[in-house]
Structure formats: structure tokens, C-alpha cells
Length: 150
View 1: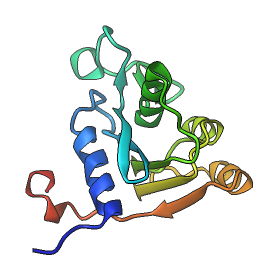
View 2: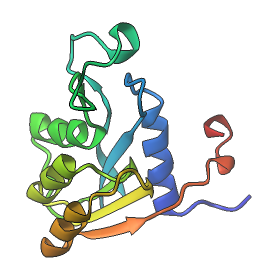
View 3: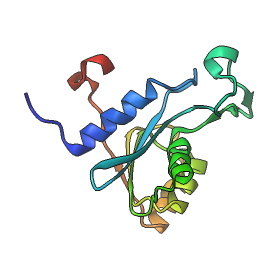
View 4: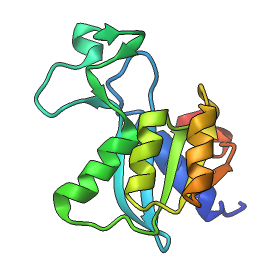
């Protein structure tokens, strides 16, 4: 059996996290990594203790569900909550980050963003990543190597 790369490993972790998502529109997972060690993880869903989209439906305003917190922000907030620095860390995410998440990623000091799937890629987000010297890498994910993610 062929050993998977670190990028494949962390991307698989993000896809596994997406299976915990409570958003019925799009399941997203994110993993923050420093020196090949996971420091935080998140998936999109409601704030702790609130109703979930899978229970009550999406709360859509201007074509966006406002009930959920995005996976990337959930992972960043986990770092903030527990005092874990994100400066120079890497972020692995199942889908290209939205503009708002992109801004949060930049402000948190993340140095590399690895994403598996294109999703409404915002040109301004790409411009901001470039200005901030954040490396953005498309890492296609092959779930076939992991049976339960097929």
C-alpha cells in the first residue's frame, strides 16, 4: 500500500471533519496545521447551543445561510479560544474560502491555504491572498484512498 503525503493526510482530515457539518447546503471542513501537527479543526455549523440547519432548515438572507459559522472561522476561533497561535500555520479546507473567510485567514497570519474543490472562487480573495503573500494551492482530493469517504 502506498503511503499518502502530508497534504493528502490533512486534506483527508478536512473531508472527515466535513462529515460533522450541520449545514444542509454544503459540508465544509478545515484543518489548521503547524509543522505537520494539527493545531485546530472546524466544520461549518451553528454556534454552540443553537439550532442547526439539519434540524430547522437554513436561515437564508441574500442567498447566504446566516445560521452557520464557516469551517475556516470555526477552526480559527478554536485557536483564539484556547490561545493557540496561528501565525505562519497552514490551513487545509475542502472548498475554496469565501471572501469573508479569506480576510480572516489573512488577518490570523496563516501562510498557506490548501483547498480541494473550487467553490465560487472570488477574484478579490485571490488578490488579497497574493497581496498578503499567502500561498494558495489547489490540492485535488481522491477519497478513493479512504474507503469511508468514497
